[in-house]
Length: 378
Image 1 (cartoon, one colour):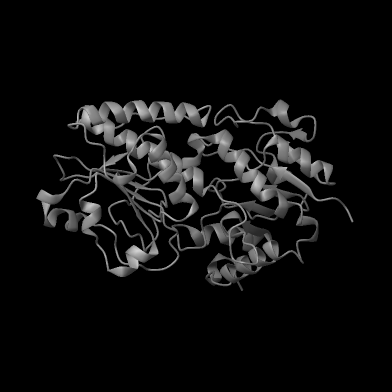
Image 2: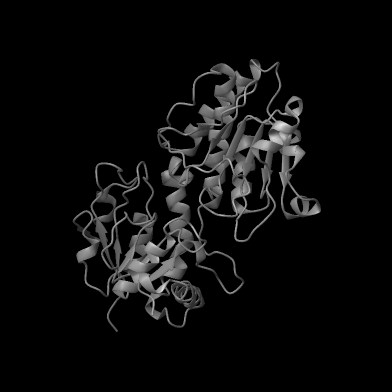
């Protein structure tokens, strides 16, 4: 049997410095009989790992050359492909964001239908216990909480100016050092009071990351409200506890309709009780029809991390909806993700019998069957 060839494509999303494969994981793949082609990193966004780190093990190929790769090469990347309309003939391993009714889902899947390609969506690579084999959730929660705390402190010190843009940090300790300093400055101007932070989805990877960052930044344990299914199922939203918290961090996995967590109208019902000034929607379901935070309906970006919600003053209200938060910590996030993904990648030579890939293939075919005829499904 011919060895599996993986083609690591360059990312195109602004400020996306992560990589689906670290040099160390590429080395292990090659040692196990795989061939790996790695596209040279573009100057912007520059991959966190230098090309030279891959050279001893992989073949460096031209940037954005994946469309011309042989059809039996598997294309692996992180974020969605650039919008285009040419048919997709390869097997792609990536986050495609097209299985939950997101805007443009049919155009994305239609390209696979037209080209005969296959999508193994990383969001749905699950083991036999239905647990994801690899996820960026922890670092998404960690980075989201960092930006939320920084935004809270910034609002206090600069009430009429949005939070400035952010660039990736070289190390996690660099991020913690900055957030801790900013929070201390905010607390000093807030009558010595640390913010109250409510985290929904606190028991998952993402929630654990958010909690760990808050504690590392000096937020007292008593100021953290850790909610999960037990709390949200006990009563229907919207929730007064969100209105009465300074910061709300949403870390849930949304896969079905649920009651709204908080709405603009709800916040205006009792303006005197509102402390909420920062919402970080780590889940980032801005185009999902079941979005439980309806006013968080536009994406934000690292160069403009927040959007201010009109009609709210003293305190102001702004939200963060960056859909690639782990890229704030590209090195640690990439290493953790690719290490977790490695055991499943090693099963690609026997994908038809490996539960992780079998399940992903069946889900792809199920979603493909929902395409309207005009998008290529027959």
